[in-house]
Image 1 (cartoon, rainbow, N blue to C red):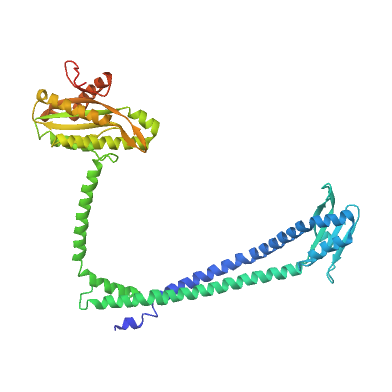
Image 2 (cartoon, one colour):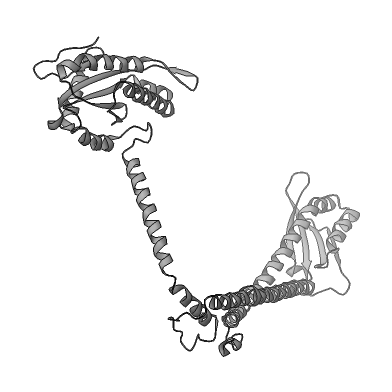
Length: 423
């Protein structure tokens, strides 16, 4: 074993840590005692005052009765009850009319004793008017002795607690931290003997745990290629997450359909797939009333159900299509096709009728049967020259005509005039 390891306990970081903890603990203990002693006296005095007030409160009715009926036996019983406590050495009951009962413990008489006694007013048991005063004189020597005993007990408890804590910390640092760290460092340093050591340690830390850890780190430098492999794996995982979140950004979270961004992306791809591109803009009729009457939870369930119906119906009729939700209750369906508008008009109209029928089917939500309808605007353009915003405006214009014609119907966009199709 190298010579520096023989000197390790003397220069150990654990010993340096214990010295630092000891200094901090002693400073803390001194400050704690400096604060605890005056507060201890204050709290003990306050506790006695509260106890005396409770005693007086419990005996005040009996004391008032003793003065009111001038009964010596009741008065003596009240006085003896108070004098049972060592902290009280004299008690007097004195009425406003001059009736007096008092008792002083033997050897406790003081000059002008009653001037320094605590005074508690007594009220008449009949009309609650002032009747007299209850004098309670404290035995300050007893109070001070008991207070000092309590403070000394608290100091002793803190000292014992401090000592036990320090012993535990010392054991933890020495046995749970210091020795395992030293053993681990030695084991790591021996794991790959013969390796070139590239980490240098200054003279201050050469003979402590840092020196051992530094020597251990050098063994990992030769295996740095493992970190490169992990980095490549992490980069690949990040790329997969990027693809996943990119897809999430193009998806409507409520219905699972494409959102406006997703529609725009697929619109650009569909422009190159077929000769023509048709857009069906669908706006639900009566949805606002359902949402206002039954709440957003029911409204969301309606939107999800309608979205699933539109998606399944579209997938049944078209191999290429995009179904999306671009607003609160607005849906779009993009359909690329080879035939021109004249040949596709009847087919698109029939498909729109199926969408309307699907929308009119009642929806069961939370034991409620909800009814909605839809108005559809249809616009068609040459795929190569199609502009998404322009096509949306045309479909919106056609949908507006559908709503004007009584809703729950479909209309095509026509440049010269608006002609109805469907219902």
